[in-house]
Structure formats: C-alpha cells, structure tokens
Image 1: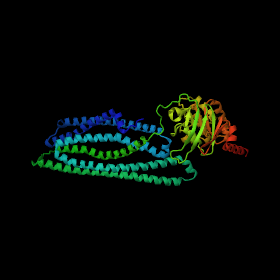
Image 2: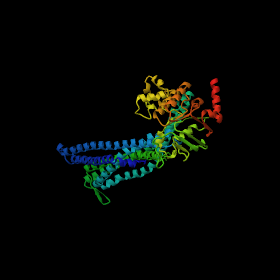
Image 3: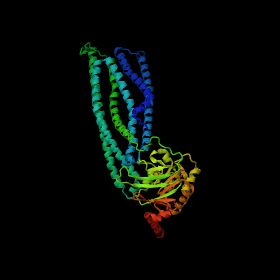
Image 4: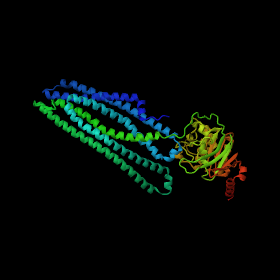
Length: 591
C-alpha cells in the first residue's frame, strides 16, 4: 500500500481547496475596497461644508455589499477548507491504523504504546491544524498582501516603500526563528511521549500499584515527568510569545511612523508646499491618507498571521516528520510473490529442523524442532516454563518471518502461504486471554459479527460458560470492561475459547487455556473438543498432564528441543520430562 503524504491529500481534495481559495481571493479583493470607500467619505467631508445623505449614500451601499460578500466568502472558504482538513485528519489516522496493524511484533517490542498513541493524537492534530487554519491563513495573507501592496504602490510609492521595510524584517527574522521553534516543538513532543508512556503504563498496572500501596510513590514520579513536560511546553510558548510581541512592536512603530509622516505630507500639500523625495513629488490629501492607512491596516492581519503560520508550520513540520517516519517503517511480514491461498485447509502441520530466535534475543528459543501432525489429530504440547511452547505455536501464525523450508501446512511452505488465509485457517486462544472492552456477545462473535444469539450460545456452551453468562444481570450484553477486568480468570479463559470455537477453523490452538478452571469444567471442555472438533486439528498447550492425557499424541519440549513426540502411553517410557510430570501430578492428587 502506497504511503500518502499531505501533498497527496491536497491533490485528493483539490476541488474543495480550489473553491476555498477562489472564495478567499474574492474576499481579499472586496476587503481592499473598504479603505477606498472610507477615504472617499473623508474626502467628501473634508472638501464640502454641507454634506448630505445623497453625497455618501452610494458609498454606504457599496460598503454594505462588500460586507455581504465578506460574510458569504469567509463562510464558504472556512466550510470547504476545514471540511477538507477534517477529512485529511480522519484518513491520515486511518492510514496510520492500517500501518499499525501490518507492523510486526518486533516493532511493538521496540516502541512503547504511549509514544505511538501520541503520534495518533497530538501529532495528527498538529498536521490537521496546519492543513486547515494554516492553509486559510497562508492563502489569505498572501493574496491580501499582494492586492493591498499593488493598490498602495499605485496610491503612493514613497509611503509604500516605507511600509515594506518592517515586513521585510519580519520575513528575514521569521525564517531564522522557525528553525528554533521547530526544534523546541520536537523537544516538547518527545517529552509528551514520555508523559504518555508513563500514564499508559501506570493505568495498565494500577492494580499492582494499589496492592503494594505505592500510590504516593507513583504520584511523585508522575509529578516529575509532568514538570519536565510543562517546562518544555513553556519553552516553546515563550518563544512563540516573544515572536508575537516582536510583531506587535514592529506593527505599532510602523503605523505610528506612517501616520506621522502621512500627516506631515497632508499638511505640506494643504499649504501648497508638497514634499519631493528622490525627484517624486508627494501630494497627499486627508482622504488619500485615510485610504492609504486603511491599506496598511489591512496588512496588519498578514503580519500577525505570519507569526501564527510560522508556529503552526514548525509544529506541522516536526509532527509530520514523526508520522512519516512511522509510515515509512518496513513491513517485515508480507505476502511473497504468487502467495498460495489455503482454500480448503486439511490441518496437516509439519516442522522440519526448525530453529527460532527472537529479533532482540541472543539465544535460540527453539532448536532443530521436527515433527508432523496429521489432519484431524488432537495434539498436546507440554514442557517446563520457558521451553518454547508458546513460541512454537506463534510461529504457525507467522507473527515473525522464519526460514523457508522449515514449517509446512498441508505440505505448503508457511512463507509461501497468503497471510490472511493462513490466519483464517487457525483459531487461536492466547495465553493472556485478551478480551475487548465490549459486551460478552460481541467478544464471542468477534470472528463473525453477523452470528445470531443461538450460535453464540452454542459456542459458550462448548466452553462451558453459558450458565455463568446467564447468571449476570445483563446476560450476554454484560460489558467485560478493559481487558475483561470485570470477569474472573476462568471466565475470561472460557469466553476466549468460545470466541475461537466460533471461528470454526480447521486448526485450533489453545495456549494454556484451561489453567484457571476447575477439573470438572476442564473435563467438560475437553470432552466438547473431542466431540465437536472431530476431524479437525487441535493443539492444546497445557501445564497439567491431565489436560492432554487423552490426546492422540503429545509433543514434549525441553530447553527448546523436542524430547519426544508420541502417544501418551508410549511417552511414559520415552520421555523423562513427561514421566516426571505424571508422577508429580499423581503425588499432588494423593496429597
């Protein structure tokens, strides 16, 4: 998928921006007539002793027409450009979300969630601000400046040249300030990332903090991070205010000088001794001066806007750079050319001398693993903690790239299988039993959001959780809370199993998914698996031997290697690890 930049979005919404710019041009042209009308009124008043309504009625009517044009034009340009900027913001977030879905697990190991969330929030908002208000202010400032300067030069070139001097100084100084402001904004955003990271981590671990009575300690740590963030914000704000003050000072000095000099020119013209500058005779009436000051007053807005535009552009430049860096991240997990789609997966799984090490790991988690699961077999997977059980099943989901010729599904190399069809063929119950902050019904029907309540209940009965759900006051409409916080560990496990069963996939993987339920419930679930998934491949990782005692085969891992792969009966003689687990469990039950 091609990355779209802000330039591409401008082109996509060209017509909205074009209508807005045309409306803005009409508004700017109309706006520059106001000083002429005011100058005309002053000219009439200063030259006629008895001024009647008829003398100024035409000018008043023109002013009202200009006011209507300004109202309609400004409403139109804001409607079109702000609509385009809002759509760009939404599409940019959508593009970033799709990118986030395609990035590998390694990326999220290396980057904190809080930092990534700040890109989706404050950085995208900074881009939207510049695309919307920045575009309006930039176009407005450019057009009104060009039109006003043209009319000023026609009216009086000498005063116009004097008026241009402060504007040139602002442009030169503004270019120097923008780089500093951009650096200050980047520092501010990095500190904001730290604040986001700390907050996200604190809320995630709030139960641990409360359990250890560490609220005061965390509050102190948060205060330190918040203070550092505040200092960076203040540094950027101080720089912005200094630039605004400089602009206001320049404007004040320039207006005072022009009004004083213009009044002097009016006086000299009135007494019949006009001033000559570089051979050019300046003739200035009161009405002409009013018109000229009106043009200069029109230029005040672009001068003020310049400071705001520079601030927005510095924020935009930094934030857009951070977003582009995210969108430019290499997508490690992608389909190969001519990827094979698993239309009718049979569930045969083959590992051939497979070894695996995590991208940031120094040692191999799995070493020379070889075995073969036939279609429809129920296979148990056991081993000590850290033996590589979860790593092995995660390899089937292709969360990481692996070496070719090592893992096959239905005799097709895993690296040649279309990723979507591969994951569609596998129903996975993760070890952490993640549930979305939604109702139970939607959590179970996650794989098929069109499923009716009867199908959902059938899946819940498969996981032996239907009675528990009906015991809640709102039944299947009960909201689980963030990560299923309102449910017990056993309920979360069983709802996760029901969600996987709803997928009706040819391969089902359960990663230690019945460890939090009692023996009777475990037996019910295992009987349902044996009955309902007959003819479909099922892999169950277990910490209890009883969970896998009735499987067709059991794979025993030890220190990342296959110690044995055989029937439960044979393993008692061929696997020391399995025999020891059986003995310890028997001893535990006797106690």
